[in-house]
Length: 115
Length: 114
Image 1 (cartoon, rainbow over the protein chains, first blue to last red):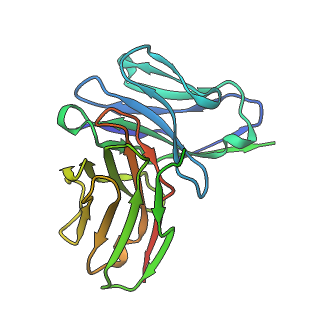
Image 2 (image 1 turned 90 degrees about the horizontal axis):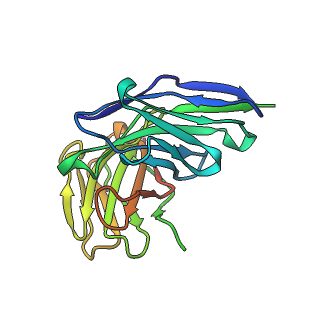
């Protein structure tokens, strides 16, 4: 079975400084990995998606993530945080073969951005 | 275009009552998913429809939970004999075709069982 572990439940950064949200995955096969963002009282929005093409994936709003098979990691980064980035971020892995429809979410990382 | 919509946005009910939660997927999307998000947790998969049929219902916690999608568009999640532990945000998502396509989520229905 596949799973993801988000290593930090809460991250606080100053506006204009880099963001790093950490995620490790476990999967028997080459996984599809995602990062979703959830702003308060809004639906989940896809930031980016990895599906075994380029290992460095660029997403929306300046976010990117790098798939590292040797480290089983898929960390999310952004060079410069903006106040509007404050939200809950979820690392997600999809199932394989017959369960590819099923998304398995991590427990989330709350990103706080301060002035 | 319109995204995934869910009604009601909030539902308060009493223990033991029956509730129905509705999801309108993006027009033309054949795949529809239900997830449940408890406080402080990530969403958990409940059920996946491809067209009118439930292709994977392995996430439904017990037989009090049931979902239908009779015409391959709108879906209803039904919960019988609600329990306080059913309190959560119920999320619906849809994707264009099938597994591997990006899932687009609705805003959710917050269910509170008193």
